[in-house]
Image (tube, rainbow, N blue to C red; front, side, top):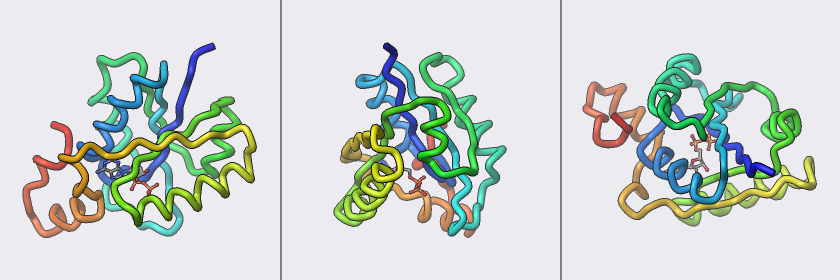
Length: 148
Ligand code: ADP
């Protein structure tokens, strides 16, 4: 059976750190579905449509990667596609505490769901979508933080 992982996130925007995680995740999974979510507590800066379009273009030559958007609970999305694995990234201990809480809650909602964490590659550890957005808002150049 094909091993499929869901990589959910806001991806506002999708950074080199996210890209690296997908590439490395493909060594573990046959297929990765990148799911761009509407996060109710975060007002988006880049639209969902633009984000999905740019990630789709980025992976257009890779048939193992799909890109979708969703506005349900992540566990409901995983159940709908019968996906057993979530892929998430860890940059630091703050991410760890946050991700641990989400993973535990998700597992309560969907027992078979396993969250797989990959440590961020050292070179991308300090990239955060929040800071990239702030730079862009202020007219700065974000090209070194996002995939070309
Ligand atoms: P969310 O709003 O769901 O946290 P994000 O788009 O901020 O969505 O992040 C999605 C996932 O990518 C999270 O698991 C996050 O820890 C991870 N991530 C964020 N930035 C990086 C990075 N620079 N390198 C690797 N993983 C990252």
